[in-house]
Image (tube, rainbow, N blue to C red; front, top):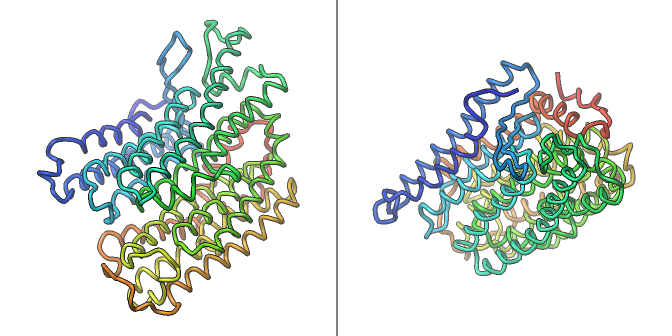
Length: 516
């Protein structure tokens, strides 16, 4: 189904134009000395993007019933068979909504690097635009462009305003991601050439659109294995999956708080999304055969991340390895031919995005106030910042998947859906649940109620103003999805079945426990 207005492109174009607007002369540091006006501009753009997404989804569901299915397609480079093809279904809508919400939260957050001005907001809006494009594009070349372009805002912000080791972290991030992406790009070119060589296109040209390629069934077992491994490597680095996580700890430690929240909440989700959107339709046999190994990688990441997190003395490092552990559940969920597990993986990815962004922002406030992120210098903070302690408690219990939070729904569906396929690795994942509760709650109790370090510098008070509104909204979303997950699950599940195709078993009976 195609609707004329507002077009799906507006979800990409509006934040991109907003980023350009941030560089206007009237937002320069000479005129807007405290970057207040440019912040209002960026907030307005992010709100407009969120409103446009809601309007598109509402118009589509009114016109097309409960199933969300929209597309926008036009020729882009006809001589090469490259199309400008965007699609919004329940799968991409879940991630686009997450992108819009997190972008707004990070832009609205009061804390930013001291020297950052209009460029800070321009990079955040550019990041929103490119991530939106990655979640909407169904032409492989177009997807690859957004997949690479989303690195630029993160690298730019980290290199300009990151920590002492920001350049080393930026270089490591770039090398890891480019190494994985290069093989995927070569594989994309091969797929386009193969479609032309097999004569499956109407005009005898290349083809890169996912629906066209998936319908051709043109790959032999060797080709599917090699190309599948190339795609999987690129997405494994982006998620990241162990052992391709080397870029993540340094990036999360050195990036500014807002950029760390943006990266942790969104960039890894592109890898989760892309495996479902592209790999299952293009390489179904490879995905079935690789399923046990992917599940093992996911379960291993859950335990590995939890064990390493338990040894950390740095708050940001703990959040980094905690993120590896929690994303392991998503990897476990997308490894098998189970609609329930895949739906749970998408739901868990959305939940993780909300929770981890909230944790990075809240922890960032503590670090800025105390001047340290070392556990040995933090303790007894609940007495002086009770509101921060309250919100941190909510996000910590959400991180450990307490019932009535969104993480519980996602992890429950993943564990139940994966049990029949991978009972051993699912059992290992359950161990990670216990370990996660140990290190998360221990860290919270130690920082909030541990011995007070009166000599620590304190440069600010408790949460106040708009920051409280942002954290309240994130907490409300986490709890609302935990209590009323039906609407989101109803949108995700049909899209997963259609996208992954006949390889996936529609075992969504238990999913209905959380739906109407």
